Structure formats: C-alpha cells, structure tokens
Length: 230
Image (tube, rainbow, N blue to C red):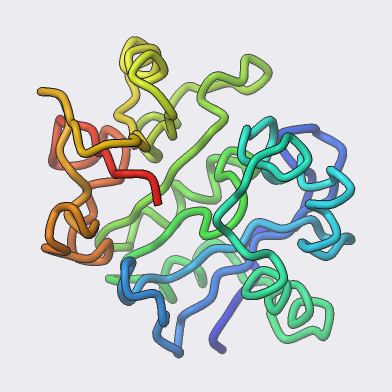
C-alpha cells in the first residue's frame, strides 16, 4: 500500500462534518522538492470533493477560520484540484485501508511525517498524531487555529507551529507558548527567528525532511521560523 486511512469521523472544528485523514507516501517518494521524502497526510471532507468544498465554504470542516480560504478572500497555496482531489478520488474507489493504531505506528516507523499536507491538523483528534509521533523520526506541522477559542489548545503547541501573518500575531502566539512560522513581505527576521533553511532567501540549505525544525516546541530549536512571502 502507498496510502492508508488514519481516521474517519467527525471534524474537531465543527463537531458535525464527516472527515477522513489519509496518509500517503509509504511506497512512492514525494515529488515535493522543498519538503523532500516525507510521508504526507491529507485531511479532507469525506463527502465533498476538495475543489468543490473551497467554492461552497464546506472546507471550513477541515480548515476552520483560516484567512487563506478562498471563500474568505484568501489565496491558499494548495491546488485542491490536484493532489487533494486525487487522494479523495482514490479514497472513494476503495484504494486505502483503515488500519489500527499499532499498524500505523509500524508503517511509519523511522520515517519523517508531514502533518497536514492539506487541511488543518486541529481538525483531527490529537491522539491520532500523538500515536504516529511515537515511532517517526521527525515531523512538521502548522495550524491557523491557534487563536480559535472553540478548540482546546492544550498540548498542540508541542506538535505544530502557529501559522502567523504579522509580528503582532507572532507575539500573541509566543504568549500562548507556541513557536511560530511567520510569512513576511521582506527578508527581515527578528532576534527570535531564523530563516526557513529550505527557502531561496536562506540559500536552500536543507529540505523539510532533513531540517525538521517546524515541529512545535518539541523541536531542538527554541527560535521560530520565518519565510518571505511567495
């Protein structure tokens, strides 16, 4: 199998929509040159195709109140009609098998995991991610839901980075004990940040699979990460 089902159930963002989490890359290497060879996880609405959900607003079940959602006037970088749609179609063809927590741990052992290749990790029960983190050798993850008061944030700061759009948001995230990933307009980091090692402005010194700094407070780095908007 190249992919497996990690979770089928209600979204933690609205407690009513049915979502599914698919992990891919068990056999086929990711073609993403920035991330490198990482296992990918796709958080999608179970009954609505991703490219349709972004038009109707039903992507709220997996993206929450993210400002980058098209229905909010944003421009999310993920092209939902590509990889997310392919995963959605494969799921409905029955190409993926739901595995137990023990099986999942064994399959991802000593691999590097990307939490939320599409969709926000906080849409999924935290226990799903914590289970995988027992055996992987590294991970990355980001959330725009760190300010969402409807969601209990305890423990999430250890797993994911707070995605922020300004210095003000960066300060707010820090007061909530998050490390953050800040998108900036110019190459100007502050003393608490370093440039993303996989970015052009940093000279593409590494790739996510090797760097692994975007792992919340469980990372070896105390500094947060910044990248120039692209």
